[in-house]
Amino acid sequence: MLVFVIRRLLQSLLVLFVMSLLVFAGVYAVGTPIDILISPEATQADRIAVVAALGLDKPLWLQYLLFVQHAFGGDLGKSFAYNIPAIQLIFERMPATLELASFAMLLAVVIGLPLGLYAGLKPKSLPARSIMAGSILGFSLPTFWVGLMLIMVFAVWLGWLPSNGRGSTVALLGVPVSFLSIDGLRHLLLPGLTLALLNIALIIRLTRAGTQEALLTDYVKFARAKGLTDARVVGVHILKNILIPIVTVIALQFGSVIAFAVVTETIFAWPGMGKLLIDSINVLDRPVIVAYLLIVVAMFILINLLVDIAYSLLDPRVRLSDAGTN
Amino acid sequence: MEETPFKRFVRDFCASRLALAGAVALLAVLFIALFAPWISPQNPYDLSQLDVLDARLAPGEKLGNGKVALLGTDDQGRDMLSAIFYGLRISLVVGVSATVIALAIGTAVGMLAAYAGGRTDGVLMRVADIQLSFPPILIALVLLALLGQGTGKIIVALITVQWAYYARTVRGAALVERRREYIEAAQVLALPVSRIIFRHLLPNCLPPLIIIAAVQVASAITLEATLSFLGLGLPITEPSLGLLIANGFNYMLSGKYWISLFPGVALLVTVVAINLVADQLRDVLNPRLQR
Image 1 (cartoon, rainbow over the protein chains, first blue to last red):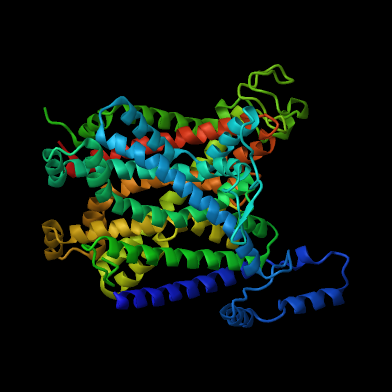
Image 2: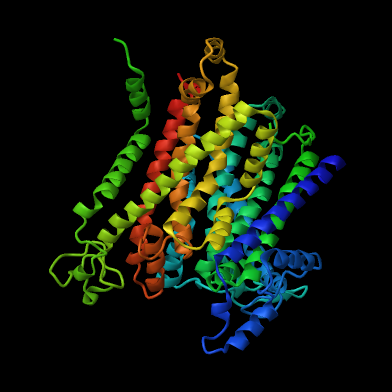
């Protein structure tokens, strides 16, 4: 177990290193931000001074080495556009993204699990068939378009829900959150639902498949033979046994949800780090792009590692090994 | 009466009415994309045919030249129906070409890994695994942030996202097939390796590849639309469905729904049709499910 974790950590560091190299070289190949940052009226001397102050006059390899050196000190450079440390900028926006992603995951479980259970218990019934047809639609719908349609129906036509921003936030342990106020919850609902859609479909399918499998097992038959109520058989015996794959998928999907939040945040003008990335790409704010990508990649590696470890703890049949290629 | 494999395939495929409907819808979409210049009411990119006075007409209203804009017009007086036909063409070209190239690259890599084995196999598959552990949208975002905008660049991004699926699938299938007798027979006959790979091994690895490629075309089209919507995909001179939707987003809050709604419906129909066909292909081509 310990060997596995160490091996995976080393591998993760290697991935992170390669990623930083690629991202750094790539971002610097795209073009120079100087033209955006310096006004056309600036004199040549001013230009040279700014270029030197940003460290853009040094050769690329030296810039990278300096970047790595600073990165170990927790400094990923200053944003060109905001003139504050990129890492600070991202950490300021991160709670909004994490809140949106968590809310979306919660919605996915609360909606997906009961629907999937129902579809698994009564597969032939009309509601179950509609649920499954709906889940196919959930996989096929282009998520960003669904977001637009939700805005159109609920914000423009019906006027029930707001279409952009976080609404009023409440400070929880010093971090502003939306879910503690009615206004904030109203703002969360549409982006949360948009982001949850794909995962609702996924959880419905997983739950249904798991339920159908569990119904055929001996322990369920035995539980029924003992005369347990349906509620207990379903709620305890079945649910407990199908939960492992569902928990795994939820954990693994959390990373994708954060990545996909880029789209949702752009549509709903949600002030998270995904929207920050798109804004930064548009103005070629290199340090923020590099910092965002490295932080998200690091988050991903961490999530994957935690899932692997949690999986082995939840299910004793799973043995962790380093033979990942077969 | 002897039934040819092709006839059996068609019969099995048509067993599901839903899949049949999907296939019909897919053929219609392909027809529209292929013949867009001849069946569109106007050429949406010929500025001489556009009239700013026609801008933002609701569906069913009359254009200045007396024609009816069935699906309305956009902010430049462009007939939405024509714009959708042309957009569908661009979306399909990008999605399909990226998938075909990724399929070729992934198959080559997978075959190489399966045939070479050892260290080559280990390194290639580890790279594929690491890439597969990141969601496609993140990889595409990274690449486009680095490469910038453009049709070629988005195709490169879509290829990068996809190749690992094919590489893994081909390697798995090839490793199984390699141990079969007919490969051994070919080797005993001292056939050249290239012939064994292309004439014996590859054809038998195709069914799973076809299924994955079908699903991947749909997700490539969706991903391209998403990226174009974010302004990172295709340039404005080649408006795919995603760009049309993005353009309509600017007018949505003032209630002009049709500029975004209809391109989205076209996208949805395309993706659902492809998925339905792919689903049925999976059942028909899977020998384990043969009754």
